[in-house]
Length: 454
Image (cartoon, rainbow, N blue to C red):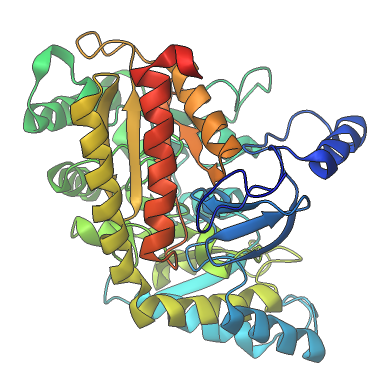
C-alpha cells in the first residue's frame, strides 16, 4: 500500500498499526506490564522536528510532543551535537562524587531565566515527580511546617508524595493507597464549569473563600509549609486561571507565611508563549519545579528557588545519583539557547493558529463545549450536550484514536477524560501545523458532526 494518507507530510504506507508495529505490540504484551499507556499504537524508527516515522515507514505529525517534553522538537541538531560531544568526554561521574561544569552552567542559566530578580539557587534531579517531591522536602525544611496544599484536577507525578498531591483517582491513584499524610486539596477555578453561571471574577472570589474556609475546617495556615500549583492545569484539561486568582493566591500565601511552589513541568520552557507560565500572571514563585522540555528528551529535572529557601537542607539531605546528568545538562543549555532564539514567541504564533481552528469547530459543532489555551498549550472539551455540559469521554477517545490512525498524534486530558490537548513541538512549520489541524478537523467533523461515520 502506498501513501494512503495522501498528504504532503503525513505518509501512510500501511494502516496504523502496520505489520511490524503489530509484531512488536505482540512482544510488548508478552514482556511489558499493561500499566504503561500508549496513545498511538506504533513503534518509532526515527524522528525529526515535528515528524515521526515508524517501523513500517509511516510518517506522522506529532501533536503530542512526548507529553510536552519536546518543545524544541525531535532530535534538534544542536542538542544532538552537544550530547555526542559530551559522550566523548564523560557520561556520568555523579555530581555527588566528582563535580562537572555543565551542572553549574545550567544552574546559573535557570537562576537567570526563572521569574524574579532575587538571589536563587538550583539543583537537579531526573523527573518531574522527583522535582516535586524535593520541592516539598525543601519547603518543609525551611518553614518547619508539615502540610502541603495542592489543587483539584492537579497532576504532580506518580511517586507516593507526588501521587498524593495529584487529584484524579483513575488511573493515577486507584488501589495505590494509603497516601502521604498532611496533603490537602484546594478548589481551582474552572470557568467553563462554573456553578450557577458565575462570572470569572465571581468564580475566583468563591474559590478564594473556599481556601480560607479550608484553613478553618481542615488545616490551620500556621501548619502549612507550601501551596503547589500548576499555572495551567495539564492533565487536568488545560484549565487556565485568571491573573487575578493567581495574584490573590500568592497574596494569601504571603499573609500566612506559606511558600508558593509553581509546578512548571508541563507549562515551562516556552510552551505558553513565555519562558515560564507564571510570567503571564506577574507572580514570582518562591520555588519552581521543571522537567519535560528542559532537556529535549534527555531525562533531567530541576528545582529553582530563593537562595535562602534552597539552602535550608543540610549537606547530603537532598540529591540523587543521576540527578543533573552531564548529558541532560548540556542538552538543556542548548534548549535554552533555542528558546531564546525565537521559539518562545513562536509558541504564541502556533497558539493563535490552533485556537482559531478550534474556535471554528466550536462554532460549528455544539459538542465542542469549550476551547481554551495559553500560547501553544491549547485544548478543546467534548460534551454530550452544550447546555448540560455532560462530558463525552467516549467521543473524545474516538477522536484521539482516529487522529492517530490518520497520522496525527494527539492526546486526551481532563478529569473526565473528555479534553483533546495539543502539545506540538514549537519547531513545527506552518504547513505541518495546518496539515495536522486539517486531520483533527476532519476527524471532529465525522465523530461529533456525523458520529455514525467513524
